[in-house]
Length: 201
Ligand code: ZN
Image (cartoon, rainbow, N blue to C red):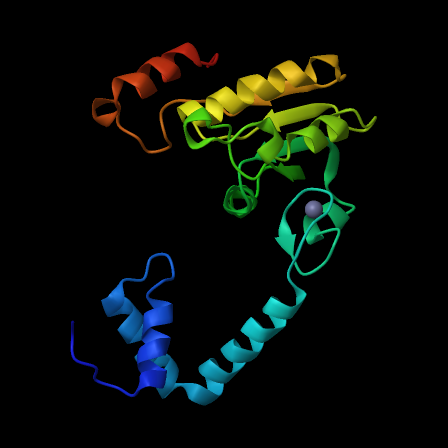
C-alpha cells in the first residue's frame, strides 16, 4: 500500500473522491488537492451544496426521477408534452435524454430491467405504475427508451404486451448506426439492426 502523504482527514477525502465514477486514485488525489487549495471558493460551497442536496433529495412519486421536490421538476413542468411518456431504465438515462434536449415529454423510471439471471422480475421494477400511467387519457404514446441489450429488449417486449389494452402507441428507439459512425467499424448485430430499421430518404 502507498505511504500516506497527508493527514487522515485528507487521505479520507481522497479515498471518498476515488469512489466517484470516472475518478481513479490519481485523479481523486488531484481533485482533493484542488479542493484543499480552493477552500473558500470551492470546498465550502461544495460542502454546503452536498449538505443541502442530502437533506432534500427525494424520489418523485409520479415518475421515479431523483430531485429535491416531489413531483419532480420534469413532472411539474407545464410546458412538457403530456401525451408522450418515455420509459427509461434509470435516472442516468433520463438525464442523458434531457441533455440531448429533444424529447420534451414526461418520463417513467423503471429502476432497472428484467433479468432472470440476476433474479430481477416484474415486481422488482416500477412497471405496474407505468401501465397505470399509460391508461391516463392524455397519454397517447409510450416510448420505450431502453438499452439495446438483451435484458433491455426483453423488458421492452414484456411492457409492450402489458400495454396492449391501453389506448397508446408503443414505440422504441431506433437501433443502428451511431451519428458519426463508420460502417466498417460496426459489429454485425448493429449493422443488421440498422438495415432492418432503415428509413425512407
Ligand atoms: Zn417526476
